[in-house]
Image (cartoon, rainbow, N blue to C red):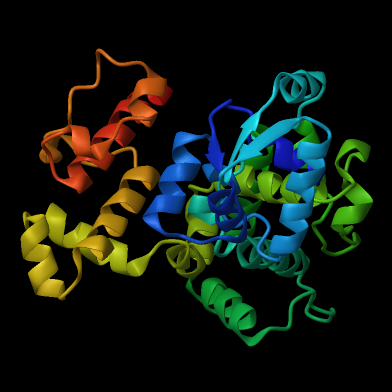
Length: 328
C-alpha cells in the first residue's frame, strides 16, 4: 500500500491529501474529479472504496517518516528521495478507467463470465449444468439476451470474445480468459492467476480492475454490447445525461437550470463530469480561454479570480487545454 500511495504524488505537484483520500474511496464531486484529472490520478477514482481514512493517514505518515514525501498544511509533495524510489519500479495501469467503468465493472465482468458459460453449454445442446451465477438480475438479463439473439449467436459471440482478447496484451488476455467456465473447463479465480508482482494489496485489486477495464473498453460488437447495455448505463450519471441532452438540444446553461430546478453547483458538476468523460464535448460553445501561451503547470495552477469569465467556463477551459495536450 505504501508504494501505491507514493505513486499518487508522481507528478511532483503539491497535492491536498484529504482530496486524494476522497478520490480513492470514490467521492464524485467536481473538485475531486478535477483534482484527479489535473494531477493524473483520475483513473483511481473509487478504486479502493473500503480504504479506511486512518489506514490512509498511517501510510502517509510512513512516507513522511521515510522522507519520501513532505506534508505541510494538508498538502503533500514528492521529495527527491521519493522520486528516486519511483524510478526504481513501475506498475502499468494505463488501462484503468474508474470514471467510466468503476460503478458496474464487477457486475459487468460477472455477466460476461456467466454468458460465456451459458453459450458454451448451449453450443453443445447441454442444459444440465450448475450455473456460476444465481442472482435474479443476471439470470433475467441473460435470459432476455438469449431470447432476442439471432440464430448465429454462438458463432458471433465467440468471434467477439476472440477479437477483443487478441487486442489485449497477452498477459492480460490470459488472465481474463482463464476465468472463463464452460463445458469441459472450469475457470480459475483471481488469486490463482495474478502475476507474482501483483499479489499484494492494493496491486492485486488494481491489476484486476485494469484488466477488466481494458476488456470493456474494446466492447463494440453487437452481442456483448446488448448484453451489457443496461449495466453500462449505470456507469454514467443519469442526471448528467439529462443535462447533456438539453444542452445538445440547444438550451443554455441558465435555461437548463430553470427547467430542471438545479443549482449552479450541480450544473457545474454535470458539465465537468461530461467534459472529463467525453472527447466530443462541445468545448467551443463555452468560449474557452486561450491558454496557448501558458505551459501545463501554469494552467493547472491558474486561479479563477484572475480571469473575467464564469467559473464553469474557466474550469472547462482548463480541461480543454489539458485534453488537447493529451490527445495530440
